[in-house]
Image 1 (cartoon, rainbow, N blue to C red):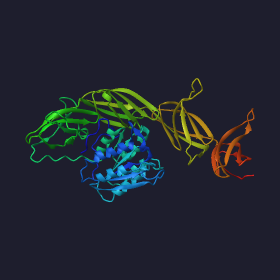
Image 2 (cartoon, one colour; image 1 turned 90 degrees about the vertical axis):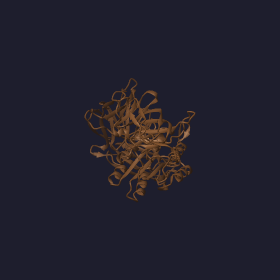
Image 3 (cartoon, rainbow, N blue to C red; image 1 turned 120 degrees about the vertical axis):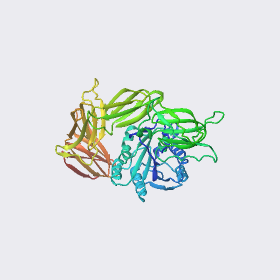
Length: 546
């Protein structure tokens, strides 16, 4: 069973026990962004200390290793290394290796997890990868596709992802890797949350051995959400932790616990006074308990004065929960939590502010959690889906180029400015939008086209927007040679409209169909070359110095 989760641990998937059973590999982000700071300290320092804290308490028989990426070279997507092969008794070696790591490069997290999975498949034992990253994939790979591939392989493999200081959008980009393999995505926004996240994914802390001859008693704690109630169902109880801190004769409470219990587990403890700290998701209670003597179980009871939030986020009535729908909850005494799609979580009784978002849609409401009760919230974050494709001309889709799509409110304000709603890059740019009227604006190179549309709740609309454009490709000069493109016609003041510029020896862009002038300065010798762009066609021009 796993050590206590910090009260502010943020979980994506429904609660459940997470252990790094079998052989495990920690995949550690060594990219340059780890020099970023949280609370005045570099993230890499926090990560090193968190690993040391968790690994120092690891059972020596646990087979665990360390994979790192971005730690040796700048800008190298192949900078991935199995630093410590998985095996028993490797905790110290992993800590020392992490302390020696440099943090320099890119974030090839997908390939690093793939290599870790291949390394673990050398036996048939259960395999777990724990990815710790402060950024998203930067090496043109898809972590979601890898998760699906690993899950389809039939091997007993699980990936957990600890997002260290990621934004909500960045979290969504890597959470799917955990989702599809049956693991958990955990947000860690500071040092305490990172330690808790590692404790919940790396392995359980072994129980210390009692001093020889000490009188012991079996401890079987009881957890209640409300005084006089019943214990929570098993899927919640499995997440509960009970930490026991010895109390000295002078009343001093020990800094470190002698034991952490999980769920329905029991253990033998030396007779004495303890402070028992009980955690279940966001609820926590501390109390003094007396253990022993004798062989009969000691059953200290913890009352959390808490309730359960059963939350579901849907894009439309009767629709399935949407995995991209994000929720965040804030309540009394600084309690916060967040996740995606659904939640079945325990919170202290009180009034909370719930914010749910899906694409450009956002809903906020107050939720009251009552002690001992389940609060059901089935929320429609009302959206319709719009998918935008660009066409060079009707019937000819833009392939292989990432055009830019912006969604605006349809009516400009008093100053003539339209309110931006969302943006994305195509092909297949997808938007979740509240029901209403919008304007889609597509930009590819120098070509721009727009189309109004209406989003309807629970419906999908496919937009194909013709740019009436073609491609002009130029070969000219060397890397220092500048090419500028202008319209052939001049305005009343005698000026030509500019249509972008680029440097040799090769450059291309997309232009609206029409006539243009390519102006090149070959070291003081200027050439002007007229050319015509035809919609749906590619024009290739080789221009030499005069």
